[in-house]
Amino acid sequence: MKEHIGRILLSEDIILERVRQLGQQISKDYRGKEIIIVCVLKGAVVFLADLLRNLDIPADLDFIQISSYGNETESSGEVRISQGLTTNIEGRHILIVEDIVDSGLTLSRLKEVLLAERPASLRFCVLLDKDRTEDVKFDYVGFKLPAHEFVIGYGLDYAGKYRGLRYIATLEI
Ligand code: PRP
Image (cartoon, rainbow, N blue to C red; front, side, top):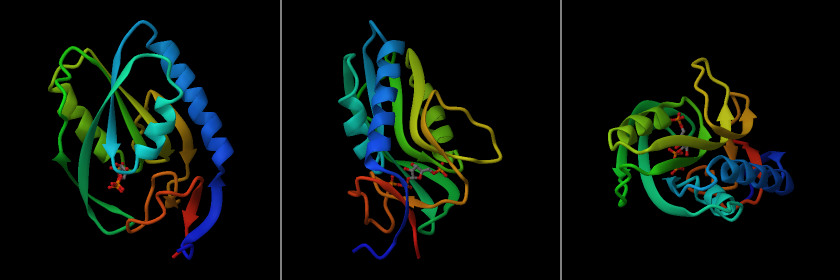
């Protein structure tokens, strides 16, 4: 079960401390408002659970699933919504929670789709942001990662495995 785990990049303590800081910052920025958190399935669920418990503002939840086509460690550039929202987000403050941004394609597609529903505001909270040529900035970022790292753990999988690791490690294949 552990044969693909390489170097530990982010320990459980480091992750939880950063998530606590993000929770504080988000709570401060949205003080007096109610938000809907849209969690991008599946990888972001672990991050979501910890982030949610570090917020002290009212936050409802919804989920969306986006499929990209490609092999196991690289996306192909084509994305589609495979499971949509169940909430009407018009006029609501929306915070997207995502585990990792690689090419940026998933979130740019999601932004397009959600803005069409006319939310009051739309922001992005990303745990891991990989370096890329296109400079896309997100509102809340946990950690920056070098572009070449493929990582597993804390929600991130390799072939459906390792999502339950408490830390984030490099993949060894
Ligand atoms: C990962 C991640 C993002 C996307 C980022 O999802 O959770 O949604 O890839 O890649 P991009 O910036 O190049 O678009 P994945 O397709 O692995 O699905 P999963 O979260 O269900 O594991």
